[in-house]
Image 1 (cartoon, rainbow, N blue to C red):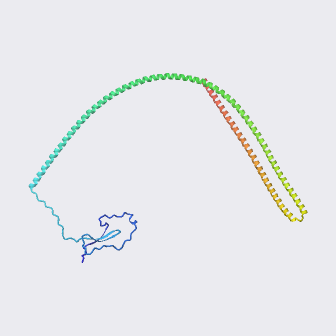
Image 2: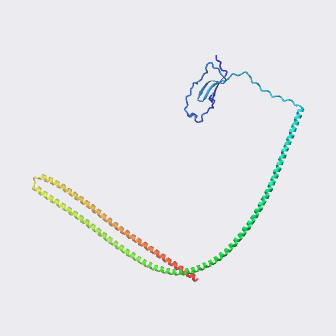
Image 3: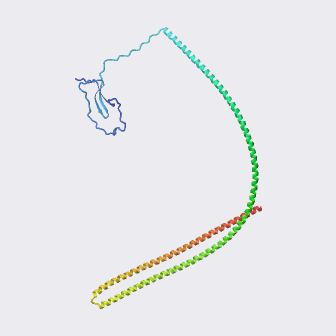
Length: 397
């Protein structure tokens, strides 16, 4: 019979058997894939018969969506115990001589260490003294060189200052001499300019008085001319109004005559229409008499005569209808003609009235403009007279 394993462990491992680490799916993405139907019946691989179990051998395994389930077989415990570790050696007891010798060795080591420490301290002190000496030498040389450079710089600065001051004094003396020359030249130019200005002022005063006299004479002439123009304008306005009134009277007379002419033509037209109506009536009467004579003389042909009479009666009715239509159209045309003539006359009268008002308005504006200009001329004249009076009073004062 096959021996059963001593220990069986049912363990679920999250890692595969190949030794690679198990990668968990990221959160939020695990349940997005459609879930497969889990097989309820596990798939186990049974070991073959006659197989011997080795330590940590896997007997069967079961794969599922969450991981893997398998059985691990452990080896039998061994009866051999491990060898204990060796014990540490116990310390030996020391003698007085060994202790004395160790103390001596320690004292020698301490003295050698103190000697070496003192030697190192002395060497360090010598180095510090040498460094301080070199620093003092460098400081002394730096001070000497700096002092020499400063003295040389001060000498050059003093020499440059003296040279600059000498040059500045020379420039100031030249500038003062030039200023005196320019001042004298400006005084002479000022005197000449004052004399020329006084001469110009005198000539300007003389010219101003002459120009004022000429301007007054021109203003008087302009005032006379403006008075003449104003009188001529008033006379022209009066004549224009008279012409406009006469034209309006002539237009009214023409309008009445035109209306009478149109009425006379309409009356003649109505007379012609009445004459045509009488002529038609006369012809109808003659036709009727002729028909009666034929009826009296020709009794055997009464049927034909009646038919002809009926036809002629119908024709007469048509003629009368046509005459009525002609009368109506003539009446309509006469009324339309009267209306058109009346409208044209009214339009012409309105246009004449509008033109008369426009001409009167233009004449009124021109007269106002002329009065405004005359008033401006008068104001200018008064202002000039007042200025002359002020000049005369100022000159007399």
